[in-house]
Amino acid sequence: MKKLVIKTAIITFISVILGAVLIFTALSLVSPKTMSDFTYSLGMEKASCTYSVKAYEKSGEIKDLDTVLVKALSTEDYCTLKKYSKE
Image 1 (cartoon, rainbow, N blue to C red):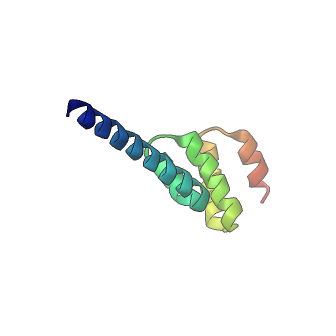
Image 2: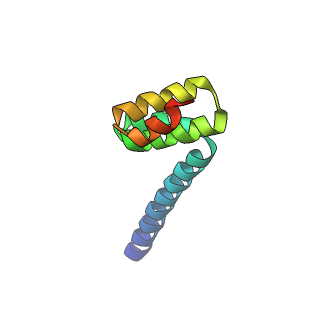
Image 3: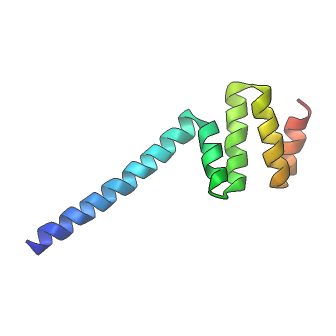
């Protein structure tokens, strides 16, 4: 009985971890703007800058370009600033 409980707990734990990874990956591909906001709220500013670049490339909106420039400036990512400030 004890082995069954441990086995079930391990399977559940692995399933939850895989589900979280799957959701994280799906959001990264489908909605980079959401991922940019989420990673920024977690303090992952460089990852947020990367996702904001992807969001701008996907949408092409001026509002997303502004977000790219602000986040690139805050993370001191001068290559991104140089590339997108011309636009």
